[in-house]
Figure 1 (cartoon, rainbow, N blue to C red):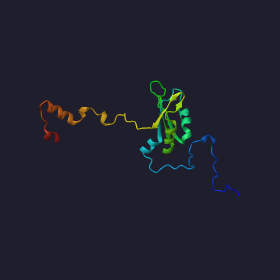
Figure 2: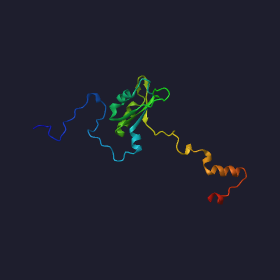
Figure 3: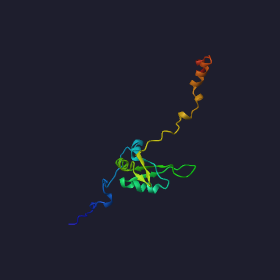
Figure 4: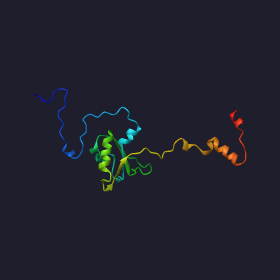
Length: 158
């Protein structure tokens, strides 16, 4: 009898280069609720990149740990060179964890890498920080009060 019948996949052979790696399931399905927190748990920050590291090099270094969705290395707008860090987004959270466990404090082009879960950028100004202090009515009321004047609340409501 032939073992390769229709509808069945032939048995998978172990990849000799994959020593020490966990085997990945043959079919990966994305979860129904892939929110922002799930994406951030699948995205790895890689710091300490040497100047000659590019997107392809970074992808090749992190590919052994799982299927990669995207690789990004932000560039400095003034110099056009990268800023020494990058991001690798995996398809699965477990792959990102494996990459951190294996690559943190590892070496690439003679530089020690810092690898951990990427955090959302919190230094971007929000709507509240773009508003001038005097745009709030409270500022005027306080200023008038400090100068010994009172505010006619009834006149403000009209």
